[in-house]
Amino acid sequence: MERLSATMDGSLESGSLLRKLYATDASEYQEMPLAVAFPRHEQDVQKLIQLAARHRVGLIPRTAGTSLAGQVVGSGIVVDLGRHMNRITSLDPTLHRVRVQPGVIRNELNRFLQHHGLLFGPETSTANRAMIGGMVGNNSCGSNSIIYGSTREHLISARGFLSDGSEVTFGPLSPAEFASKCAGPDSLETRIYQHCRRLLSPERNRSLIRTHYPKATIPRRNTGYALDMLMDSSALDPASGKPFNFCQLVAGSEGTLFFGVEFELNCCPLPPSESALLCAHFVSVDEALRATQLALPLKPFAVELIDRHILNATKRNLEQSQNRFFIEGDPGAILAIDIRRDREVLVLDALSGLVETLKAAGLGYHFPILTGPDQECVWALRRAGQGLMSNIPGDAKPREVVEDTAVDVRDLPSYIAEFDSIMVEKHKIECVYYAHAGTGELHTRPLFNLKTAAGVKMFRSVAEDIAKLVRKFNGSLSGEHGDGRLRGEFILVGQPSTSFPSRYECMAPISGDGKRISS
Ligand SMILES: Cc1cc2nc3c(=O)[nH]c(=O)nc-3n(C[C@H](O)[C@H](O)[C@H](O)COP(=O)(O)OP(=O)(O)OC[C@H]3O[C@@H](n4cnc5c(N)ncnc54)[C@H](O)[C@@H]3O)c2cc1C
Image (cartoon, rainbow, N blue to C red; front, side):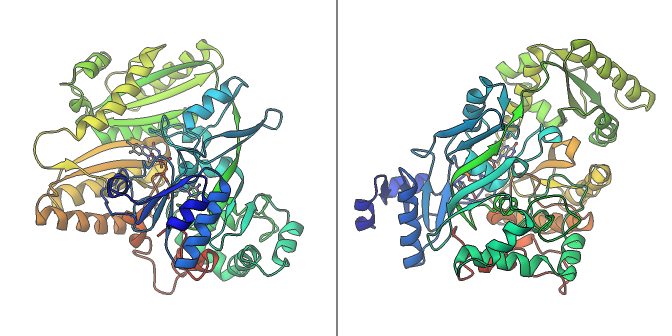
């Protein structure tokens, strides 16, 4: 390692304090890495990959390290791209395309794009620190995903390295270009295209994928490799109008297939200038979820559910208690419905129409409409509530274990009812609910006391039970946070043994020797 470090312009460090700092992300996991690298440029990255391949050591690409499922925790070398590889390399304002290095922070990218009337749509609650490399790795998205989708939909091309250190660029390919890639000289890149063709052309495999992947109506689907997205291309199916693009798979592959050094992203025009927020109050989570379906035809930018636990957590906080001015009584849940249009009158028309619809359906009891800076108070309250929940007194704390499941939005009420009965009746634990309700995504954090053996046992048992429940609804174990170490083992739960090989196994040849880049 010392010899390699001397040849790098960046650094490779193995001091125990630094390794300890990089032994965690935002998940429950902790593991000491062998070393931490800070590459200064892509040649440094290539050298690291060659070293890792020679010594069969895992490399863990890392940007801000805010992953919630242990994606950047491991025993290999953590490669921090945020320190030096953080430049916006070019912008094509006509084509609405921007190229960035992995360490560019999402909100900083948008501050730059704003001057050109553009926006990188996908967001996360961590957008003030999450970086594009990590957003691609996890296929991130946030409350505005009803409009902008996830990072995958905006990734045009990606340049980087495969596990043997060879440089590749993945981007859109016509059927003829795909055929020519498959006929290329013998290399890992060529084998990738050949493997995709072999795997995704036979109708039997395509049909198994369609059957066993989450329902096509679930937009948030971050479980396993996105073979279902990859196979939807004219190179493999003449009926598809889409080009073949391996980026479909790179997004959400959590650093296991490819080490990106530059990403080309699609940008969107800035959103309509006028907005308002309806904060409809409901007596229960179930009632709020039924109301969600009535809001969706208005094409809201966000439909976010905040439950009583989160609202209560903000009561004793000095700053957040001032943001509670719009809350009436003790709602079981509030739906924040964000509507944007070009003119204020259109926003208010849409929202008052929705209020009438909700009242006619007997859903909700209070319907404040917030405009101007008041809207930000609601989002601040929601963001803070999640954090404040962790400060509740006692050893039982809300834990990330089944915090990111997604089902068809129409299944959400019955899914939550069954979810609740598993938690309350079987495990006798309380749950905190907050949801990107408009997209069928539920963030639930059951309260566990992980200081006791019984609490740890229950943690695992809950993970298993919910994996089975998600399977029953043909949902996705992860809607946005990714599988990581937390969910990887549950991807196949409930799949018939005759079905497709594991979504990880079937991609093994791509990452060389069946070994992933990431450890
Ligand atoms: C409080 C909180 C709220 C959150 N809210 C959201 C949310 O609303 N929506 C959401 O989607 N997520 C959310 N997350 C999860 C996380 O913030 C996002 O997934 C985020 O986009 C990760 O970015 P990062 O820079 O921290 O990536 P990291 O955690 O550093 O990495 C993420 C993955 O990308 C891989 N990776 C990084 N760089 C590269 C590269 N160059 N090449 C290949 N792979 C690479 C890593 O190996 C890893 O697998 C939340 C997390 C927290 C703690």
